[in-house]
Length: 356
Image (tube, rainbow, N blue to C red; front, side, top):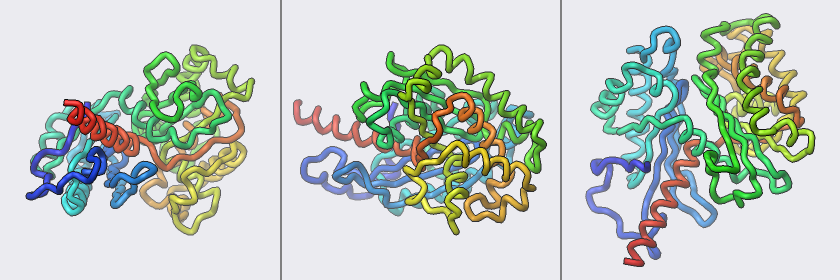
């Protein structure tokens, strides 16, 4: 389902549709509210896709403590609503016509989700839609598809979140870079109940022993093993037919550390390649650091310092299970998938009106 922004977001006098109509008549926005982050993209169509005209990202830790209580805390809801107010202001300023605003794992799990969504609507004017794990995987996959290498017949794409991790495998040759439906016969997916927040709450956030770190890896691998067997992924690794692509804050953060960037730079990270040997070395170094030490790196910072090691463990489990040697890094995913969906829907509406 595509949920547009409410009429209150439309400008007083709507712009006349651009010549040809379709996507070019609108300004689009996508919000991804996860367990850890609140992210916004605002975009206008371009010849080769879309051009981002505004963006926002803030770590809000909406799902903090949810593993113990089963509910969103008051502090977490206030932090998140404050971030969403910023998103709402940007959408007003950019005169957004169409948007989809989604929430994922924390809201799926929270017993007080309905109360939270009501407060968001009342205080920000934003109407969030809680999406399924399958829809989350589909959108992330569609957003990352432009980075697939044409010389590999299969792709394994993963997104390490705050409360869950989605892993998808599909036959890229049948996708032709257009549609990425991970529920179809040429693909499969799994959503694991492990994310950087949930694992950090279970195993600790500061210096971790090798035993605790190995236990995290083993926890993740136990869920990856049946997914690997049922999809014959090990055979694709042996045949050299599998590519891996990582779309998450963990992967982009480690890439920034690997490149030794003085500050995070999306243009250098998105589309880069990260070797498994480098992943192991960086992960081991970060595991041995205290939070204060990790926070000094400009690509980690205080907001990620206590969560990054759990992300490293999830990543290492996948590297160990599927040793392809390197992965491609995607600083893109769910929001980009939403924008592509919205633009495709606008084109179809124009086509239907033309045929009527």
